[in-house]
Amino acid sequence: MQGFVELLPVVLKLCVSALIFAIGLGSTLGDLTYLWRRPGLLLRSLLAMYVLVPLAAFLLAQVLPLAPAVKAGMLVLAVSAGAPLLPRKMSKFGGGSYAFSLVVISSVLAVFLVPAWVALLAPHFAVEAEVSPWAVAALIGKAFLLPLLIGMVLRMIVGQAGERYSDRLMVLAGGVMTLVAIALLVAHWEMLFKIVQRPGMLALLALMGGALAIGHWLGGPTADDRTALAVACATRHVGVAVLVASAFPGARTVAMIAAYALASALVSIPYLRWRRKRSASAVADSVA
Image 1 (cartoon, rainbow, N blue to C red):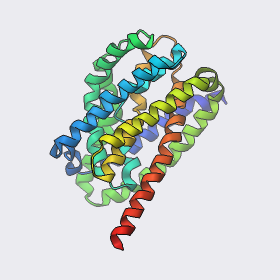
Image 2: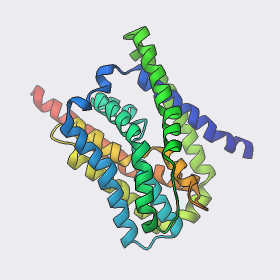
Image 3: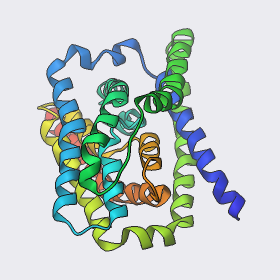
């Protein structure tokens, strides 16, 4: 049983790599440059993800009576923006090009912004940590940019057929990843309950809910853009989060990541359902 549990993170990483490859396989150069052609939306997106969400975490850590481990976890999640699987989440909302462009840009900027935010905020979260830009660059390059680039190059070779292969691979890898994530949550449930407990979980829920509100507010007048930015703000880069957490002495990484996954699902799923209903209602009104 222990060997099976230890194997789960490896399978999870493989699923994430497969999904990123599939995202690249279904994307074009036009998707990549989407935000560069919309500088106003780009600036608002980066402001939301890399300034306002970390500030929200800072305020929550100051006003809530949180254990040191939970404060460290809040810092980890606050600075770990640039979720690589955002384009997959947004594929049903028509915001794929925006999500794809945002993820690539924010992932590159994370090399500089994550270490800077850790250095600035760590003393206020009662932790001592230092994260190397080279370590962040190596992680993002190997775990995100490389499989994405391979997928995009293959897309140039196979053409439109790449979208069909991308959809199939996303369904397969996404299903396996969901099962593995549930298994990890079950396997570490006791540790999760001991570390996070009620105040910590409420703080994580408040952070994820606040992040959704920030993204929705700054997403602009286009409905798909607002939805995409809201989800981007409330979705963390798990690989970067693990890297940052490993710099903290005594940080219980798995438990905090599991707590984040639970809190993110609790706030994101109702929001996405609401946005889906609004989108369907708008389409019905336009047809009528």
